[in-house]
Image (cartoon, rainbow, N blue to C red; front, side, top):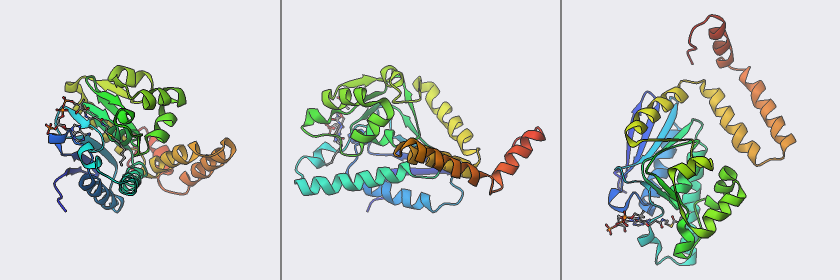
Length: 257
Ligand code: CO8
C-alpha cells in the first residue's frame, strides 16, 4: 500500500496530517481511507501526542468528498463495506484523546464535510465551501453526516442541507455553527498553528476527559451525562495535573503539564 497519500509532520506531539490527492481535490478513495486508518492506529499508540491538525493539500480543497469515480460502480454490499470502513476510521479520528482541528482550506463537501464534523474544531478560509451534495448524486451521506450534522447545527438545518444538497459559503457555515472560525487564507495557517499549540499545552488528561464528557454525554440522557461529568471531574483530582495547574495559578506561573 502506498504511504504517500498522507503527509505527516510531528512537532513536539502536535501532529499535522495533510491528505494529499490534489489532482482529485483530495477525494477520499479506499486507499486514502485505509492509509488514514493506519495513521490513526499509529497516533493512538503515541504517548506524547498533544493535538492533531488535519488538512488537505493545495489551496483549493480540504476534501471534495468520497471519490465518485471509485464509488460509481459499487454493488450495495461493496458500498456498505466501504462506507462502514470510512465511518469506523472517522470515528477513530473523533475518538483520539487529544484535540483534533480541521484546517478547511477550500471545498469541504460530502465525505469531506463529514470528516470535518468529526473534528473538535473546524477553522475555515473565507473562500471555503461546505455541503452534503450526496442527494444530487442519488445517494445520502454515508460517512456519518446524517448523525453528526444535526448534532452540530440542529436537525432543521441538517435536513435543509442533506435534502437540498446545496452548498454554503464559509460565512453561513460560521453562522450555523458548522465551523468555529473563519479567516482569510493568509491568516489561516498561523492561526491554526497557534491554536493547536495552545490546545496541546493544556493538561492532556483534562482535555481527554473534557472530550469524553462532551461526546459520551451528548448521546445520554441528562442525568446520566451529569453523572459521567461528575465522575470525570473527580478523576481529575486523582492525577498530577490538577495539583500542578492549581499550584501554578497560586504561584503566578505557567503550569507545566
Ligand atoms: N471524487 C472524485 N474526483 C473528484 C471529486 C470527487 N468527489 N471532486 C473533484 N474531483 C476531481 C474532478 O473530477 C477533477 O478531475 P479531472 O481534472 O481529472 O477532471 C478534479 O478533481 C478537479 O475538479 P473540477 O475540475 O470539478 O474542479 P471545479 O473547480 O470545476 O469544481 C467542485 C470543484 C465543485 C468541488 C467539483 O469538483 C465537485 O462538484 N466535486 C464533487 C463534489 C461532491 O459531490 N462531493 C460529494 C461526493 S459523495 C460523498 O462524499 C458521499 C460520502 C458517502 C459515501 C458512501 C460510500 C459508498
